[in-house]
Length: 439
Image (cartoon, rainbow, N blue to C red; front, side, top):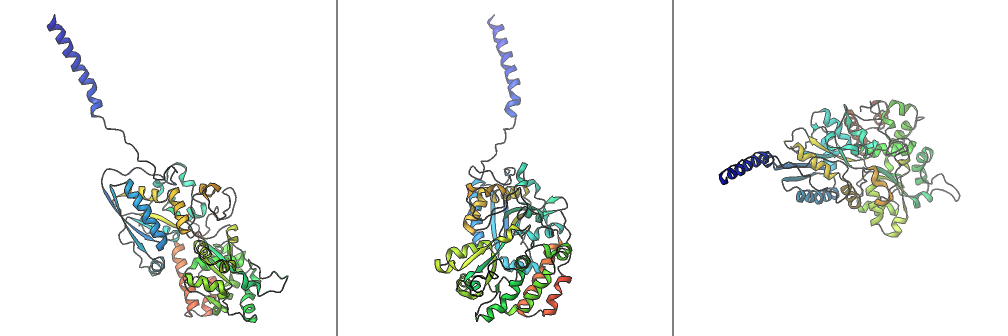
C-alpha cells in the first residue's frame, strides 16, 4: 500500500514539473525606462535603448550657449542610459554656414546632426538621412507648429525632429525715431510704412544724426527676408514665389532698390554686447535681430539704455515668418538607429524645450507649451487661427537651401561693395524666382 502511494506521489510530481517548465523558460516582459521628462510627457517618444552598448557621435551646428545647454541635457541622458555613450561636437553656425554655401560642409561622420531647418530636405534628397517619422508616436507629430513641419517634409516623410525656433524681430531705437518727427507726427512711429522706410536715410541726414538707418546681419539671407517682409508688410517667404511678387505692388523692387541706394547707412557687423550699447546710444534707428538676441540684450542693458529700445514682434501676426529653427536629423550611415532615435526623442522633450527657452531664449516648438502655465512670454497666434506659426511655408523643398545660399552671397556682396547696384537689383528676376512647395 505504501509502495502504491509512493508511486502516485512520484507521478504527480513529474506532471507538475512538466506543466511548469514552459513558464520557467519564457522571456521576462520588457519594462520601459521611466520618462525622461520628470513627469512631463516628451514631445516625441521612442522605443527604449536595447541591451547592446551604443556609441553615438553628435555634430551640433549651434551657438555656444545652446551647446552648453545641450551638454547638460546629454549628461542627464547618459545617466538614464548608461549603455549609450554620446560624443558631442560643436560647429560654429557662421563658419558652418560658409562651408555649406561653398558645398564644403561635412558632419564629420556623426550619427546625429543638429542643423538649421533650411538644410534638412536638401540633406534628405542627397540620401544622407533616415526618415524621422518613427521618432514620433501617436499624436506627437501634431505638436510642432505647421511652419516648422512644412520645412522638414519631403516625398511623404518627415526628415527631422524640431528642437527650437528663433525668428527675427525688429528692435527700434525710439529716441532716434522721435527726433525725426515734429510734435503730433506719427510717420516715424513704428512699425514704419514703405514710404517712411524710403525717407528714413534722408531724414537722419537732415536731422544731423550720425546714425545708420538699419543694422542687420550681412551674412544671413533670412535676416534680409525678414526686413523685406517688414518693409512690405508681407509674409517673409512671399518674395520667393511668383504669386507673392505679383501681388506685392512692387514692394520687393522698392525694398531692393532702397538697400542698394542707401547701403552706406547699413550697419552689418556682429550684434555683440558692445553693439547693443552703441545701438541704445543712437548708433542706428532699427536693427533686425533674432528674438533670443534681442530679449537677452534688453535684459543685460542698463535701465536707461533699455528704455530707448522697443522690440517689435508685429511681423509674427502675418501668415509666415521664417522660424529660424534647429532640428535633429539621423544619419543614414548610423549603426545605432534605435539609440539615435531615443536620443533625438529625449533631446526634444517638453522639459528640454522649456530648459532651452529659459537658458537660451530660443522658443519651444510644441503647441501645448504656450499655455499660461509654462510662462512663455512671447505671444504666438492660437493654433485654431491662421498666421505664424500655424501656416506652412510656401517655399519649401530641397532647392530652398541652395537658393538661399545664392541670395546670401549676393547680399554679403552688396554690403562689402563687391556687388554693383545694377547686379543687386537684378535679384528680383534672377534669384527671387518661384519655389515649388514640395511636401
